Image 1 (spheres, rainbow, N blue to C red):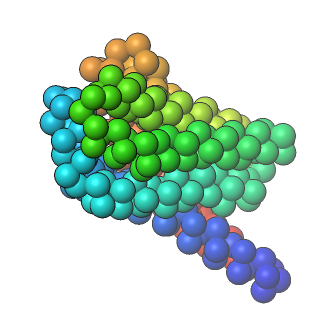
Image 2: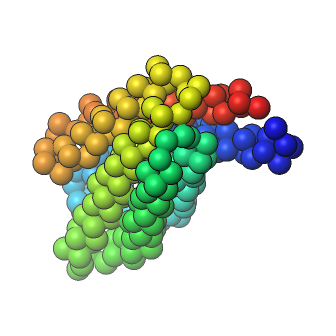
Image 3: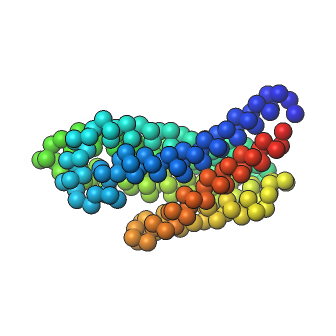
Length: 221
């Protein structure tokens, strides 16, 4: 293998390791410890959420700035793995393209949280608008983007199973990850109260899958 190919494999493996670390662990810490008091998951009262965001705007914005790393590393993981898989190329290209669209949708939601909500939170007279923008941001990041990522993961599966040398157990782990994530997305739309379990399982499976896939890439050297 040429030195440039080995360097590309190492870079893609690094992307997969970072994606697992950021999206499974650091993202949960950011959502729970940095952003938590301003989110509906921890604070169901709209007025208290808005008041907290207005009083802690730098912290809130720092938390959402970190979300760019979450989004970009997640999207990168599709490219980092997908370009080394076998099977029909159109499926891999479609999966990577859909992941990029998901990242774009996610970034729009992040920008609403980062810039629009703090401005609205400071004016008690626009609580209805604040609630509408909050709902829009949630729909973009937690439902639309996550759903598109999950479908992109499903589209990678034919290539995963068609790749010689890719461990079958790892392929089935990836299948479980994306089927459960797709189910979680459907529940977020139809029955949000039932989505927590599948979401947590999906988050728990993601890091082992991408990390093991990164090790598989390194062994290919």
